Length: 460
Image (tube, rainbow, N blue to C red; front, top):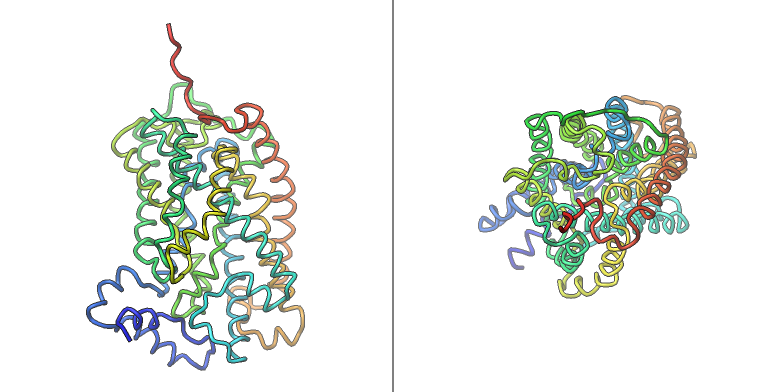
């Protein structure tokens, strides 16, 4: 067996059975103590520790949405902006916890049936299928795929919007054409095991950008006559709130991150710890930019658009572009086959990004209609239905957490999540985001050449 193959097999996650801790420990030791010639490479590339999972969660949670949070603050006002970030951050951490519990439950049951996952990456829809049946699998798969599709659309729109602030000789639509052509290149990152170096770098990139926004805003100071009138309209308020719901709903890939871990049962509180760090990026940067520019942000959804061009801003733009383009995908033998298979997906992404280039408003629409269900409502309902019987609760692989040690308390929190997100996130958020989205279409039109760009100087 070749050394590379040995290294790949060494990072297969351990058994979920609590009686197999010795085996798990051996797996983790083997993952570190591999062939000497591969040790440095493995340090940079192969990763399945709790630290790798933390970096993956944190770097996946904050990306281009960081640039739209000041826009949301102008819609919500400073106080509501901060409160809703904390609220949805905790809500997102709770549902990520539920997903991790359901993953452990599914995997434990399957391993009791001697099912091996050595050469298979467990998907969220498989968890739903195994625990609740094919109908739940279909619903989960539909929402997850649609969310990932529109998430990619937003990433592409963000790339074009960002690069415009370095080179405005080309309009944003042209930049969308260019970046759309590059979409298939992301196949060269094989899996979440091979995601370590990108997770480290990705989080460093977003951290730099967040602190650039914060420091640059304070150095710039408040613009003359700055006003902070938000919130002024319900439609703007719920649009901003739904963008924050979208911000902290980035755990559609939670199951894949867990499966890449050597000890997936340790994932339970990682997302909360990652969110705690994310707060140090999102709250100061959004508050600082809103403090400096106030209501001007209502018509500038990308925070880069208001800050003066400097080398620091250009660096932040470039880092965000790199972060947005480096995405993890699943392992496949043929890279060419993966690239070919992506074409039917890349083309619609490209097309939708050109039709609806509304960076900011589209985040809220996706948050209301997709994120609400994909990462909040479905996990909460699935958890309640999985453990609805006394026998399921008695034999549960994971008992209720120490801070909520009763099943009744779990059900109360889950019911609150479902009702809140359905009424406020999907209901009011859906109404507000679509109203705002339609306004953007009426103002700029479909296939807008340069959304929210400065008009060209008048010719004399």
